[in-house]
Length: 257
Image 1 (cartoon, rainbow, N blue to C red):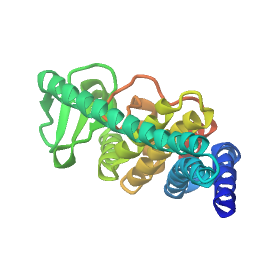
Image 2 (cartoon, rainbow, N blue to C red):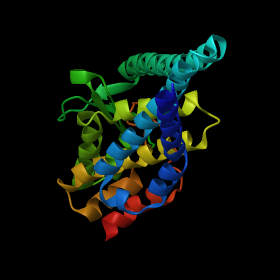
Image 3 (spheres, one colour):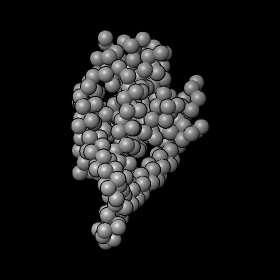
Image 4 (cartoon, helix red, strand yellow):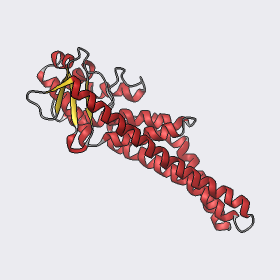
């Protein structure tokens, strides 16, 4: 019993550290802009370890209390099981909703787009707004470019945009974004969940930029970023750019360095 209580206390301390001070410290540091892949991995570790610590602490405490009070131990153990079920079910619902949204979006694209004449798996949307985004679907993933973007960008800038969007598809950034957005919507009262989602949102853009930088010079990529509207890698376009966080501002600064 004592050993389980020690384990529960240790897990509570770990969960508390991963819930507030550790994410805040990571969000305030500058190095993730230079190493987005490592930063993304660290955010995943923080999210998973934090969730397992919270659930594990409740379950361990429940087992520790069972010999002395079955009702109290059962309640605490049940709370841990309920939290695990809630998070997993919320993730499953979020994935299902995203999949349905993508199917509808692809159906609309079939009506509103035409194949690009020279680029495979690329559709052209007849819209004057500069848009570029990807629609993940395994081997049938698509890149969508608007007519306004094609008219605005030079060939090198267009290559930068396509390389950026292809990186989102090849590195499956949509999976990361869905997971962190599910965490954010499951715990809307938890400010760190929102901060983590915002950080991951920008870090996947930095990773895609790094892939594009191997194709075109940094200055060309910077011009393309300014010209193209930001769109989510899960296939849902949006006209607004990322929030003006320090990390998102660093996106262009790192290209100018």
